[in-house]
Image 1 (tube, rainbow, N blue to C red):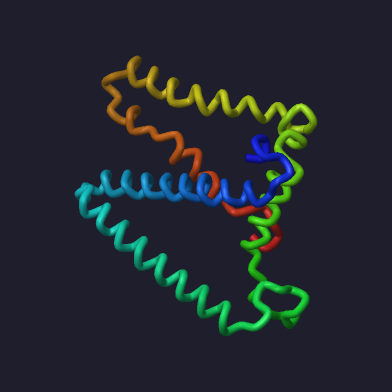
Image 2: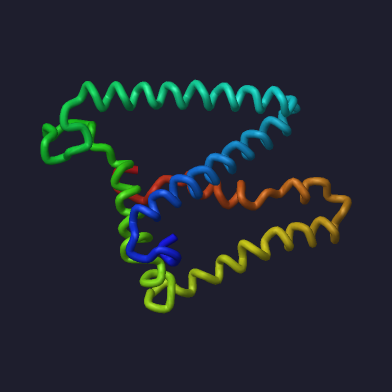
Length: 169
């Protein structure tokens, strides 16, 4: 989105919410479905449980957020909170940082012709070729029943769950 609308951080935040977050939830949903498939749970039951769980979790999340925002004064404002307060909202800084990096500064200055990391763009080619390689292996070794079960978005997306390399971790 930073390429399409450079210098507009709010457009990047909207794109992240509607694009990346929904894709992330879909890959998680697919991962759960694969696990349910391996455990021989019927797909309708899996979908029903996921649907009901999403409704319950969304309702509880909204209720807790509303309760916190209305009961804790100065929430998410570091300079107004006591020094030992846990209500600093570090997740909000991630969205703010992303809006500045990808919306205001822009990917062209990071991964484009003006940036230091333009060689990282070759990984897009790897992402396009990866499923073709899995398909070719499936055609070359048809007796191996596990090869068509390889799902690269789930396998590679799992690396996002690795903890960050910070002193706290």
